[in-house]
Length: 230
Image (tube, rainbow, N blue to C red; front, side):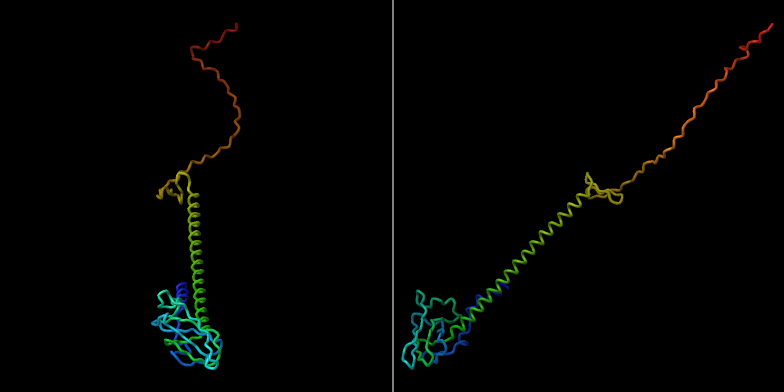
């Protein structure tokens, strides 16, 4: 869109002189109408310093106003030739020419083109090209902002995922998953050892026991004979 807009602005000076002209010739009569403002166009083979034009009212005999363009330093072109259509020079304009028939005499063939018709069309093309270029610039700017926002969002999401993974790792860089230890990106098989289960036996109070002493056994030789009571 920016390229199209720029092209329209660049081409705003390109228009068909022959198609828009209402009269052409080197001498003759022309019936001016309206405001009498016309562009005076000649081929680009005409030197600016050698061109002359007179417009005379055939009724009053008065010469009408013709505003000639200044020439370049070498006299070969009009000063505003850069804005003229390719192959043509704008040698000046007629202003406030009275309505009616006028006699035209020029040193070279001229083409009279309604001034404000051309200015309006060219101005519209230039403004339209400018607006198209402006719209393309706004789209480009918005696209750049969306792209930058997407990059920032992607970086934030990646950083958040890294923080979650690092927070779930135990110290030492190990992580247990499904009975397996993941350490340094390698998976190691682990064996789960169960500790024995001790059952607690209820304590029963112990009754004190009485110990009966038995007399010591005596051998046959140690036994005393019964004493005589008499």
